Length: 194
Ligand SMILES: [Zn+2]
Image 1 (cartoon, rainbow, N blue to C red):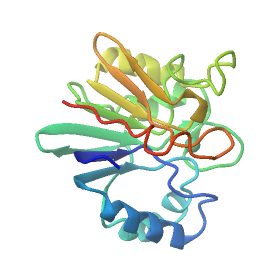
Image 2: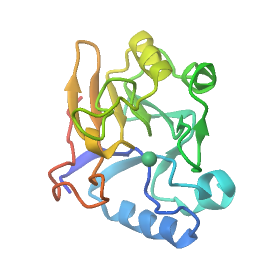
Image 3: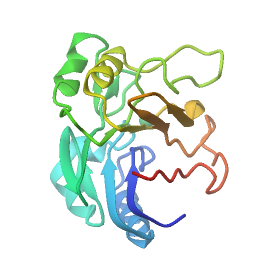
Image 4: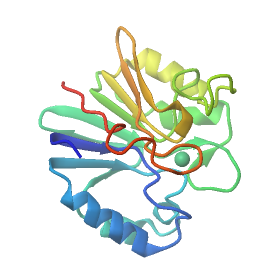
């Protein structure tokens, strides 16, 4: 891992998401990284944070956990959410459409860093370059309105990369490929200066 001030993890740090030991192991790893601060939001794999939130959160002592909530660190504002559009039977899901705004209406204005587990529609949200767009349309609309400086997400492994627009830098920070193998050791860890 490169060095930095603030490490952001956009979710899916567990596998099936039932085993407490996965959180303990992740928390230990988190504590070993050379960053002064560590921000974590959950993802659809991190079921324990939905099923036993008190216990799960108590094990994540080396990071600041965001779930439709925010934090200010070193003068920078962060807001994070684990929710993604419905797909099979995982955690933190909403049906596509209006209900997504229950989450995205909470995104603060003048935000520095938005962290969501899933991508916005049409941006780094395909498993293959000619595949369908899997991101959330309501999230895209919210990002266009709120204009965070950076939007970090993951979830769709094939979309890993960076896309810069005038108001916002989009980062799909996925680290594994579609077969759950590391994309390129350390190569996909993005360092962004603010
Ligand atoms: Zn995911």
